[in-house]
Image (tube, rainbow, N blue to C red):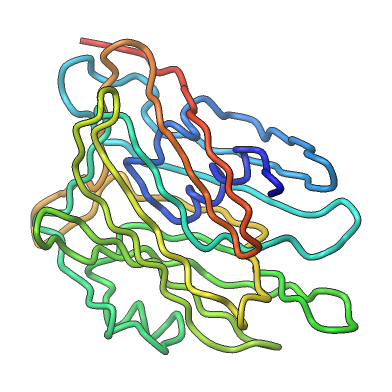
Length: 262
């Protein structure tokens, strides 16, 4: 089984907007980093603000991520189908008080309709490019705006819905569902499982994105911070496992530095 480098998984995980559990994957990145693994070329970038975090209290942050994946010979890369993250216990997700979007409200909708239906539940957005493999032709790139919605909390698990709508030559919305729950596993305190539906029968792959999860959202007269973190010992850690359409699996642990303040 072919195993790709973790940078691909980290970039795609950021695209999935597993916000608090994705903090560590981009914590130190201020400039793009390109990694070549065989024919695969991966470029990732990202970060959060502010950089200095309280050592004892959760600090609200915004999260930005960007990435690109391509095959050096121009062939079509495999699609990621599932990303599983075990995240540092010092990162948290806060959705209480943010309006909830139901999956049915954004299924089969374009971007404008999704924003209209669930705009008050919006916690992040960005842009993505998907590459579609077409038989006997060069792959075609299509673009979409990304919308990240709060899907609410049920049974102790928080849900995010990530909406993208692609058109010409393909047309339709895809909704990625991210389930986030608490775990107690040493350094790790959060488990996130992101399920990515097939795009064009498995022939579509996300190849480029940039994304930001908001530092704060306004609900009535109240400010709510969807993501926060603290820096107890100068680092944040995440374990990442990616599963791809062609059976490829890749996993690793990533450690990034943070700055502690009182």
